[in-house]
Length: 115
Image (cartoon, rainbow, N blue to C red):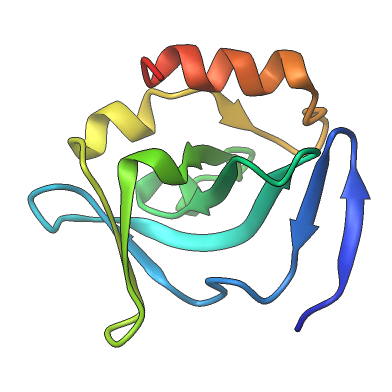
């Protein structure tokens, strides 16, 4: 499996879902998986997704952390479908290089997705 490293209260799983496309409930492409994270208890898994128009604009290379609770994985097609509209994901809390993946940030993300 891929290299793992600790990031705050999360563990980054390098290879899981790498290169998978992420689509919304209408199959509109949201972006691609940048990374997969599991929380410190290995009970919750998240994908960091970037893409779309925002990834083409300078200074806007943010990702969005999406709980796998709202996703369905199709390993054969290498697609992850989010059970929400694209704009919901694009308006979610963004994840930049300076964002710390703490339990507080996890709670902010889970609250946004009403989990």
